[in-house]
Image (cartoon, rainbow, N blue to C red; front, side):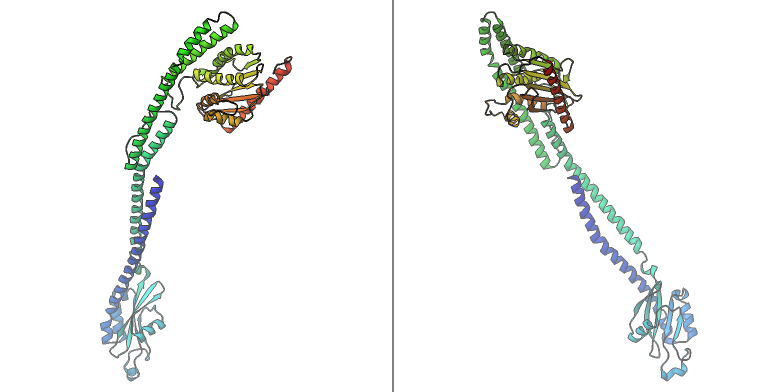
Length: 484
């Protein structure tokens, strides 16, 4: 908008300057020309009294040299030959025409002026010649020639044009400067509004816009601030609602815990009590998380992170007991070193539980599964794969997770939606494909610096998956009778 306003003012001012400066320059040139030829007519008129009295060469020569243009060689007198009645009294050369001074005009131009009796301007070498007719006492027409140099005709024109050009440039520069200031006054509030909208979209809910600038932008700023306040209030209400709904689970959980305590001893009873305890812990975590506003960093991500390897080992330890009961082979790789990621511990645990829960719900008992972790420098890749029947339409499964609508398989897709939000909160993504075990492979790309993975890095993620697949195939060939 700023540069568009500057361009408009530049074009308008330039057109106005051209519309006024060009005609004014032409008028100045005409005025200079008229002034030069008016002076020439006045100088020619100084010889007319002498010509009306005498045509004697010596008298005319003294009269011509006594004038300023005659002294400079810019004045000449052309006297025609006398008539037949007085040819014997003429002072010319053998009755021929008499020319006094420096002649520049052609004989034809002089004859034309003598015949017509009207002044004329002839173009000659180095300038112009003013031919002024003058009546003699004999009735003949003499011609006074005054030479006007080119410089006198255009005297002062160049200076006037330079002054006009300077004034025009000054007007254009001034209009551009004024337009730029007006543009800044209009653009800066709009830029602040756009930046605040981007910050709000990135999760910085405390962003507000100063209510300043033109009336329309002030109205937009007021509307934006009101919208931001409403968004904060809605999010607070949602957190309270989530906390209240989660709190309602405490009563049935208490009953479930009491019933689990009465089951007696045995592996199944212990697993049931452990599951109930874990469920209570998760409900408490949901309540605390919903009622706390976690501090945000510049990029809108939670400041606190976690060790992905530790969380994965912990959750795999929880699910391994159930896998053992169902006769599932479990493999875990890449969790032997600390891997810090910008994801809160409860969120990563919830994402892993969602994926592993899908494995147990949607694959037959005895189906093997594996979890692999790979650190690629700027991202952490978590691969969860199984040897089950796989997903017929991975794109539909991801779309179902994004929309929250149930699919034909009876899945709501909320588990994949939890995992997708965790990945995208770090600038990563979630992909579903075919695993080397024969079933489904879910790849979670977790960015370490809040940057979205580039295409080349995504290709790197696929190469990582193929390399892990080759390792698994080598392990399967080395193992005796692996179960699938």
